[in-house]
Length: 403
Image (cartoon, rainbow, N blue to C red; front, side):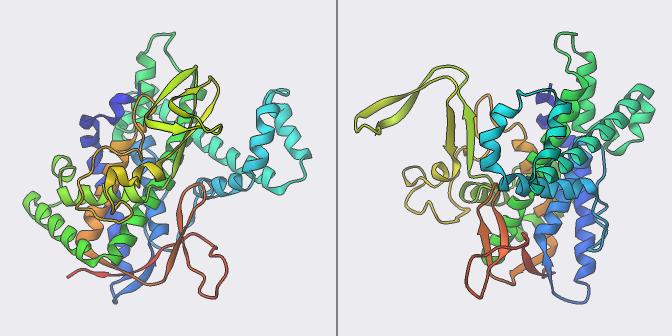
């Protein structure tokens, strides 16, 4: 049902929505630097923008008007931001307990059992999950009501019924009874898409801006490419031209190769399989194996970091950020039947944001940044007094109008 949503034809229809949001971001940044260069936390802005992009194009819902630095953050945005680091703190305990607990009693009993657990983080995860769940239901119900009222009501909504959720719901209504998804399955996709498309996209964009700030020659060359394309288009760069800009594409791909926001994938074998290897590997008993037997139920961890930095594939400069290199298909979004369905969507978001920001603004380093490796790699200000870096994720950069 979702494959048509991420088709090239539908991606073209998303461009006006993307540009409308990014122009708001552009205006807000321009206001902040109207009196001269200013240090701005670009991670915060990328997070807000990524959420609004997935909100409008994904669900026809606006979370943030991107009007300025001082804004009332929605409870959904707060929950989305806090649930991953909060859950990450409990990861070891949850991995040991969850497989057994989920089979005890019904959901009502399990919720009650949380009240008996004397760990504040567990209760916080429950409360954050409740906010995400309730907001998803509210968005779904409004969308369902609009669809029931007809085309006029749909046309009056944000995205005018072209968002992912509307298309999914329409396809579900037209599906046969045996293929039709229950309501719970559909509104659960809201949080799934938001998780998949917010933190990863915002951190990837932050990384690109950070790299461009440290490589002014690359930033300048990209700005020239973008301005030439804008002049030719007479404004915002259309979809077909934007996706084919060679230097923009090289920068995005090279960043995702070397600095993938997520460094590994985990998959479970649903049946016994024989895993081929490019060359024999040595097992724990010392024997060389030309292939690996993977029993059903085995968790397989795939290191994106290792694959995308393998010198046998990328050459001796595999650990260098060099957009000029020729990029073949990467594993950052994985491939095959379980690959990232939103690959084109995410890439298009990044290019729409970068096209407007880099063409108008110049970014420079302002503070030393450390990229901490948690569930998703995030930037923090490096501790200049020694000790471990930490604190609130942020990416302060010096921003000014580009010449």
